[in-house]
Amino acid sequence: MSAGLIYAATGCLLFVLGLGGVLLLKALLRRILAFNLMGSGAFLVLVGLAQRDGTPDPVPQAMVLTGIVVAVAATALALTLARRWHALTGRDDIARVRDTGLQIRRKANDRRKAAR
Amino acid sequence: MKTLWRSLTVIALLGLAAALLVAVLGLPPAPVKLAGEVAAKLGASGVSHPVTAVLLNFRGYDTFLEVAVLIIALLGMLAAGLPPPPPTGSRNAMLPTLARLAVPLMVLAAVYLLWAGAFRPGGAFQAAAVLAAAAVLLHLAEILAPWPRDRRGPRLAIAGGFLLFLAIAAALLANGGLLRYPPEHAGLLIVLIESGLTVSLAVNLAAFFLLRAPEEQR
Image (cartoon, rainbow over all chains, first blue to last red; front, top):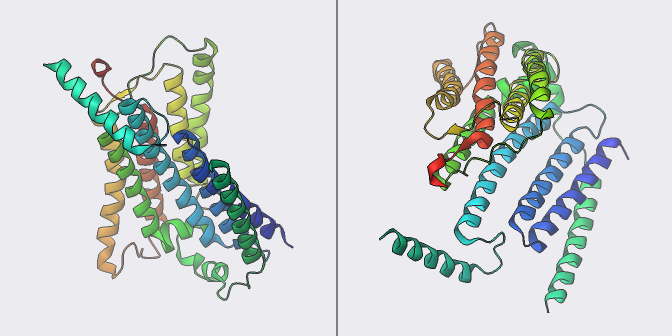
């Protein structure tokens, strides 16, 4: 078993750990972090498999570099949306979407009344 | 009921982990050796580091679209509404001193990373990440004020690097392919693109942190 395969196996475990976080955690911030963990696991699988036979393959490495930057952009956008969600509803989870939809409408109505 | 679902999910995840491990460990060797292909064409790529050659020459369109993805994320952020500026006056007294010492070194490190990208690990993205971190450090030390959303400088910088890349890509379309550099000018074009990208990406990454809603909207 080469070092590359150990990295790839670790990447698989990180991916599943992140997936578990996305499925089981409620807080949005934790879910975003768990989603990033999934991404890091996938990157580790790519980089690990790319060097399992000794010579590193530059193509997956370049793809992972691209992926990291895209993951940063997606995380920034997700954090903005989570913050907006928190500002609109006062919640940090999406446990019961139907209730929060009502809350948003009620809050918007209150704001409209206050403006008049 | 809830604990039942949770334990079922955990069991399913363990099964997935086992399946993934079996699949990855039992993977047959790759039928195509891309490393050899890259090494064979490296001489014509204009740079001597294989990862940079893949990023900016052989798969340049990936990098091109990636810059666009960053700009789209920033647009999405502007559309979703910016956070209010953080409260001032809460910083540690050590922080400005540390920032003043560290930021010149970070700028130096960024320039080195950009220059080193041609022949060893480094390049525009790493340099931009260091520059953006320097901007965030200055912001946390309250030396650099948050950017209002209609500030023109950051917009011009972000669009500039992307448009430079686009202009070079469009000019090279005459060669019969997107970003197919003539080998004799490839090195120069890659340095030009990487320099533009470093500025554009650094400002873009910093903008994720520094763009704030105007004060009166709080």
